[in-house]
Length: 530
Image 1 (spheres, rainbow, N blue to C red):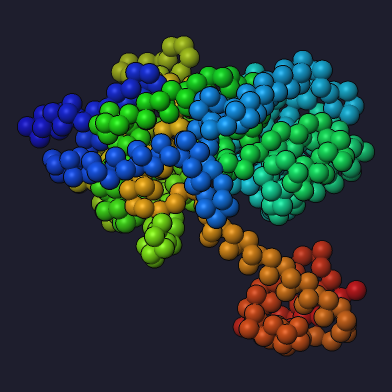
Image 2: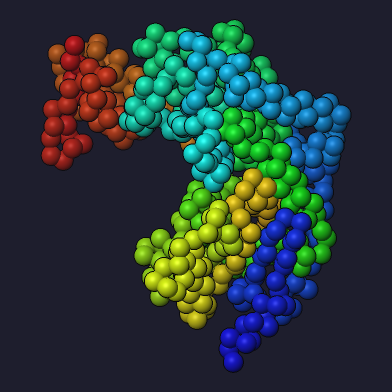
């Protein structure tokens, strides 16, 4: 009887979008019968806010700029003709450039066809390209991607070791809007040193994606890099996958970027509907609001049952948490908003954290992502019963029911298959859902002051380290505690940072610092070692 009630609820709340091959099932979210009526006014305001955004209203007030990632797949909607023209021209340039690379008309310094690309970027400049690359990759891809997405020296070495033998046919794409992102700059310098160690000129292998007249743009222009592509000030990093940031790597890898853009454009159209019951992005936003109480009370667990979508939770983590994680609302009131996001692929997680999801803290809601098509071609029938894809589907349905039996809420997204069009639709779906939810909780989804605060502190750490090392060099032959060093450089209140910096410096041969260890460690002494 309970299953039949659930079936009736499923039929009542299923949202089907044939234009993009997407079904959204929110029937296992336990909102009351009058929920949509009560939330009609707030969601209608969210629709109005989105209309203003797409019309060119200033959305990022910190930087006094528009937010126009929706124009990237519908240039005719841009508020100014020059923006429309720029988008269309850039898209054609990306296609032409990729064709020339694939045909060997654009070659490396040694005249070789580019078969690899090293993508250097941080945050959205890496997460989007990584997700799309992993979702759509095939063995026949003409250019294989690698990534520098951190400033970890060992991480640089691991990637460079993989492409060591093919560096002469590797294109490096440096992505930074301002051109001043420290991690990206470090990666660029590490890559440049690797090329030089092989007798190669970096500029003969380098492409820039950056804002016009940025530091990176000026370097690329002066050194005559292979090409430069724009990052516009009205596109944020976490919503940049349908800009050159995502389209150039995807096109070079051989993906159909027109289909990806088409999927995103069609999803944008579907999610402009003013009836929340027929708008999949609005349904997601309203389901999130119900689950979290509009206060982030529950975590969002993303469970895609497809290996190709393994990086989707990581991509969504930035999109959702950087957009919604805000201290203050639009009225300047402290609200400490946000939704925590984590996840991995199914059915792997049935052997990881689903035990806690079913029987532990009920502090989450799940989004299952179901892909109907298993593979190209037929599958084996295993044990005379079912295919491996049948089992994958069974595990999804089983986990969904097991959670529901313990009153654990879930959403299920169903798509027909993984291809450029469906990937574009998924990206657009969540971009829009995040925008709607931000309106529901009255926060600005399009700025990120907390990220800038961390960058400023990182700069202070480097400054303190530089001063501490200079002091030790001046006093060579003598040893000092971190407290003595902090006092000597007029930063006694920053002694913890000084201590942590010296611990790191003394562990690496790059710095001529010797540690005289003590127990506990904060009593250790440091001295210059020439």
